[in-house]
Length: 123
Image 1 (tube, rainbow, N blue to C red):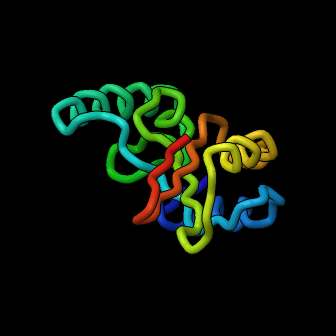
Image 2: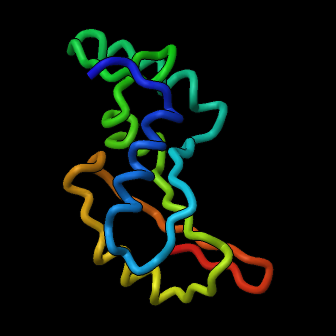
């Protein structure tokens, strides 16, 4: 794979998610950092060095670390945001998680997130 911007990859994944019948409207998809700022430089330097030695591609930014490596090392998390205009219960998100077909998506853990002013849920 060639180098891709995070926004482009997120947009592609969101498009694939919207094609699935999850029972919930998807508003967005995002990769989020899963480590503190202090840990960031050391972790990224180590991973980028290892990836260059292994000849990995599909680089995520300056450090040349593949998205899948960032996911595997749990340095980023993948979050599926549910449209806030509807009422969603925790069980709805659990049901959607069971329906999620990630066979054409990056391998890893996906988190559903729903928030509104009346109730906050995250599963």
